[in-house]
Each structure stands twice: as C-alpha cells, then as structure tokens.
Length: 61
Image 1: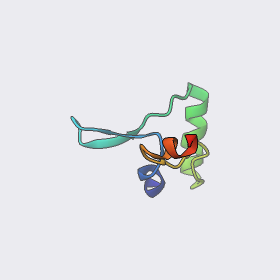
Image 2: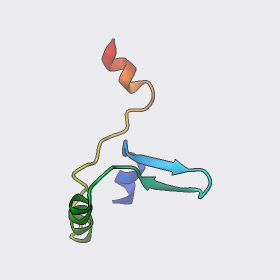
Image 3: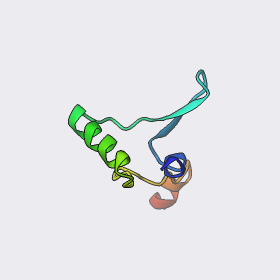
Image 4: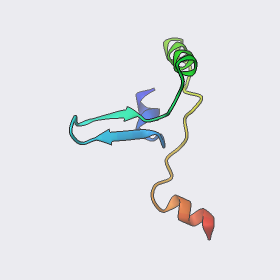
C-alpha cells in the first residue's frame, strides 16, 4: 500500500515534518471506509497516478 501512495496524485510531502501524507479531502464516512479497506488489505479506490508537472500539458496539446 505504501508503494502506491508514493506514486499517488494526492501524496504531499511536508518539508517541516519530513514526511508524506495523503491530501485527499474525505468526509468522516468516506475516511472510515478507506481505513476499513486498508485493514482488509484492499487497494485504495481513490488512487490516481501522478503524471507530473508536464503530464497535464501533454494532454492539452
């Protein structure tokens, strides 16, 4: 699961803490379901591959 988070669009690195965290905005129910899926060993259904800075520009051209 941690490997997927490293390449996820929502993964944000905090320079002050030196750690990464998920910046996905979820309500309490959605977050509970996400934690339950993690506990069951299922992949994150919100995973979105990070295409980088130039990935968005390539789609526009």
